[in-house]
Image (cartoon, rainbow, N blue to C red):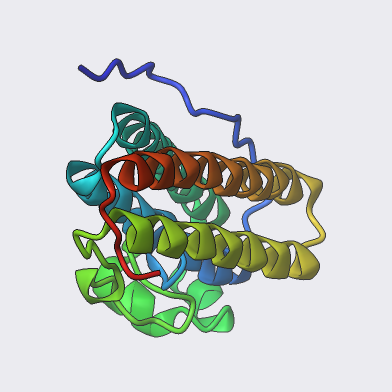
Length: 193
């Protein structure tokens, strides 16, 4: 059962609209290393895990990624709030504005729509956990690249929070991998690594 608290996991209170920042931050909503793909990947992979601990980790992190998706969506929304068609055009978002107005739509910073083609659920718990650790490193890298470009403290603060959560997720996937490998070794079941 899921319990949803009607608040963001971490506050997002951006006071200065900036459509250009929204243009690049949206990549963590629906881009190649974004939160939507992570949530779907982990919530799908949990069914192939061989230990209750690993299933729980996948479920917990997948659910948290949905909370991160909500935070990134709030950031994009607040950064475009009140933006005119001309503001969007100046930020290079005129094609986006044509299709979505100031709505939040899952795509990369380059404008490529989100697709499940970029995620994997292989059925091999070892391979999936290694992939998840790599995915968390890539997401951390993307948050760092975003931080490198931002100057507004209202934008920087939630981005730092999200970057730090990627580190925790990486560590938790490492723990899950140890559970799975110990279980498989005890059962003498060997997946190629």
